[in-house]
Length: 554
Image (cartoon, rainbow, N blue to C red; front, side, top):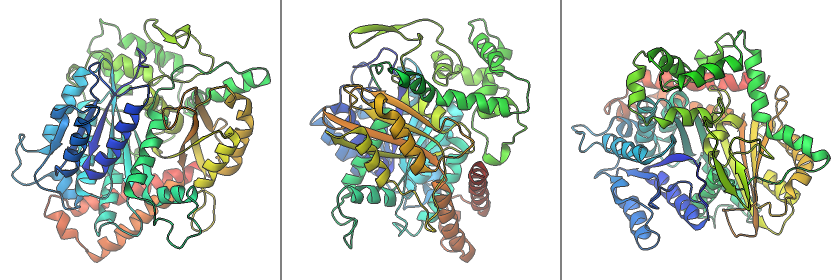
């Protein structure tokens, strides 16, 4: 069921890991009833890039024998790998031209995909932080997307390597990639290979064995990532039933949690601006008679790249919760994008209401798009609505995703199993603190989730250590159908923005700093365009992120 007003998002798969995970995701979406990532001709809004043709060729041949979802021209490969070297992936091979450069070829295909979209909202980049193509080229593509489409979202889906080590250069690659993502991506969904193994082992009864990962294949891990992504990307479809009795008021209160957090954030800033003033300004800037001043004002709110953590302060203007750019060539940037992008993005970010009413079929009833829903949940704009729930501040944009699906179980039992599979304590036994979260419940055929939600909420608050300053730490979405798994199954997908990222970043910096201090492998990076300042800047950026998270839980 394709909703008329569904997300127009592009998926960019980079490197071997990105293409393997993305291929599993596309197969999963193809099996479901909803196809939010497809054009009207049935082809996926997907671009596949790799420096070698092995994985891409295999995926395309497999797709050609079955559903034929990929566009042949969107499969881009090179003739030589990037040697697990971030610098080689980021700067490219020496002597490359626009015809041979993977960066230029990929961006040209992305441009064509954007032109096919009715309302282009953003791009989701799937890549790893280990290999040269995934980490280096992935970082470069995200930076280029930010510059080329400053009004659109850019989300990174990154896979962290095993802590034991996949490559001698993985700590350098992860350091440089994470620094680049902090500066240029709107949000980063981080999947750790170690955490995935822990989750799968917990549900396979393998934790007591000497080798818990023995029977878990790479394909199993890729499928888990794809199911987790589908849990938050797939449209929710029909709105859930109204909450009954005493739960109605409480349920409505919980579902507007993200809106309340935004209001609290704005009120806490030392400024006299009000949200209604911003709404009027942005609505006026969308008028067909807008001149350069209006475009400039609009871009001041939705500018090029989010500021780094070190550039944010409590005395910044109210616009600091969004991207800011001091560029004056606003008209040029606007002219490079579809006319509908600005209005679509404003609507996705919840700043203004749709300019006109649209109606769509929802089950057997007819609803108006901008009429108050029974429960305030999105239908089709899930990736970008998710930002509002878990990544409200640009300095804290790293999140993890956890997923579980079973048949014929209660919601409380499913919640308990999900919590059991999440690593909630650091190596010293201290519980991670959670800043914000989003819980997506799918397969609520009988509407029973709303009735048990208070108990689930209490269980999550007890288990996940939410910060005291956030009065609405949990948002939730409900869907009657479950596109992930059998039709009769239920699934829970939990997105967490927590201090677990602090442990991850500190590990990466500690190992990379030890290698950097010894001068190990630095010549492999400097000969391909990196300088020592690139490493020093990366250390400084990640240190600022760690400090921001620590300040957020004090």
